[in-house]
Length: 438
Ligand SMILES: Cc1ncc(COP(=O)(O)O)c(C=O)c1O
Image (cartoon, rainbow, N blue to C red; front, top):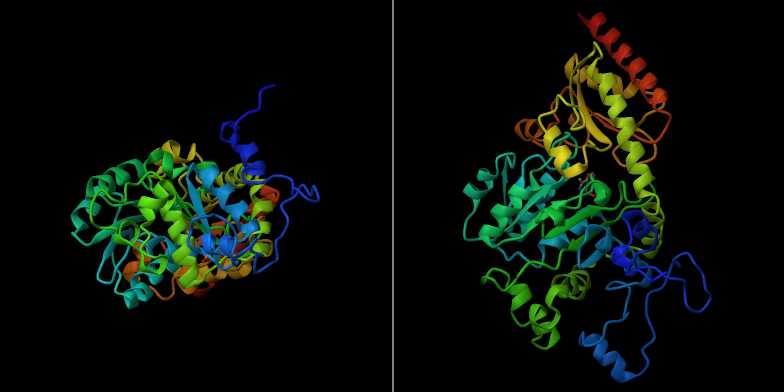
């Protein structure tokens, strides 16, 4: 049998093998946890060439670590990208993604239906760097075009948005970004590369909260940036961080020196070096373990979520369900195009009785855990208006699909009848409370 190139293997094979090989000295088959800070130089010349970025290798684990490097290569492979950068969290990945692109006073355009924490990070904290965000409804890509200014450096959206069952039209958005000469950044946390590979639809940079489905069991916080390696950073004068000489590296120009690895090299050599939100090796190890079963989990998450969504859609106490796997969803056609027809594991529904009923449902669940995470093997429930989306204005909450009656579910891998029975009794408890108050 001829030896296949690693990229020729199927997705499931690459989930398990990409980026890793048996440890050469001991033969250990599983990727070791290199719980280690510094790496011995062969001699002074070797050290100098590493520090000058003339040789690739390990210097100090804030920049690169062998366990994290396996995860980076695996994610780049699964997303169809050129390189990746592991980060301390999904939010750190968002900071690191924009960092090479933005100067004070620059702007980026973001979907107004992003995860609430991203809306706060972009709209409030990034303002302190004088990075300005313009939130628009990306359902109509013309809204993105209209928001462009000469200072716009990127467009940011989620492939499948948290929490509302909203799917972005990636192909249309990438066209607008390409025509403007700026990259399309896609948060692919909820879809994962198993359901959607945004680079195939024209996206340039992918961000992940690896905390969620990639790790898959609620154990570690982490994030990653994947670069497609396809964006021409020199096509205009917008991206000086990558195309102008870098004084900290003796005037080296990243794009000229590293070509399609420029962005990823910059993310490590400048982003992680100076901002410091590095992924811990133990976290990379646990995420690698999670990714080994990603396809199996995402299939079952989607199947369970579909059954729960259908049950809720027919329930008397439920006003509406927003799940892209349902034929009633306005995003069903996009889910077919970009997610293989799956709606993923996360969705929202509206409980009759508004805010109080939403809180009651969440508090009445016995099997589902009431907590602020998603993408666990366990089913999770949350009332966004009283928790994750509290900091937003009423208008932002509505735009994000997190109004007062909204309940968010992250459907896990338990026996689906058990999940449904728990939700049923919780909805009945909320209905009793509502009727007693009337
Ligand atoms: C879609 C999405 N992006 C980014 C983040 C931020 O990730 P982290 O919590 O790992 O910083 C989250 C967290 O919930 C998320 O759901």
